[in-house]
Image 1 (tube, rainbow, N blue to C red):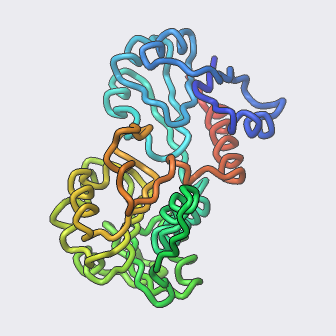
Image 2: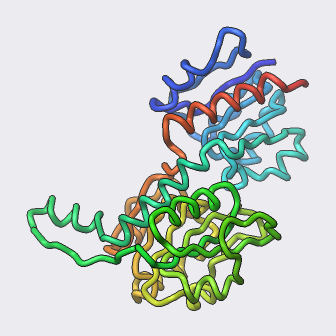
Length: 301
């Protein structure tokens, strides 16, 4: 069985060499950028592809006659490929859960603090030569509403409670051991000073935070999204940011990635942006790659 890591970046390469051992399956590691239309050539002769958030369009994967498995480094494979269509082609997509719950939760909290205190704006202003202190929101005693109480949501709740926030959550399914009070989505939106999106993206959650739900948010609230960009109606959030109904947004994920330089978000003062990096810590990356290798090790054609 031949395997290839199609998009190993300069940050992951040393981590890969640390965790890949002598007894592990041989994997070709590609560190050279490629065009998506070159996927058939890159994957020619390979049975397994490890994918770190690169798009895998069905039209190109259909040309990869030997490919049987894609190991996606994370949980959001549906944002980068059509899993159902690939299954019809005989290609199984494997995802990796739980490797970076703490990393993503910490990034969520970091964005929340950055939004509350306008840190990015002050940084830009100060670097431009203007000394202008800004007044922010104190988070002690404020309410954080978490939408999606899985591993990341629960870890975010744990940290937020530790800094003195009131935490409530909405979960789409029953949660017998919820660490915080569960409320309806409308109640959560109405009472939360900060809203954190932590849902899995699927057909039922796409555009979950639409214009109607955004209108029900507490005026001036902070929105943090470290889950998936498509959970939010993009035009609706842009309108809410322009009007100030959403006071500030901390975003790590977008409808199309990488975010284009001319995207409206890049021209807004009340947003704090990061480059889909919430899961990027050394500890999380080591766990992620180790689990990916173990998946490859267990595969049979």
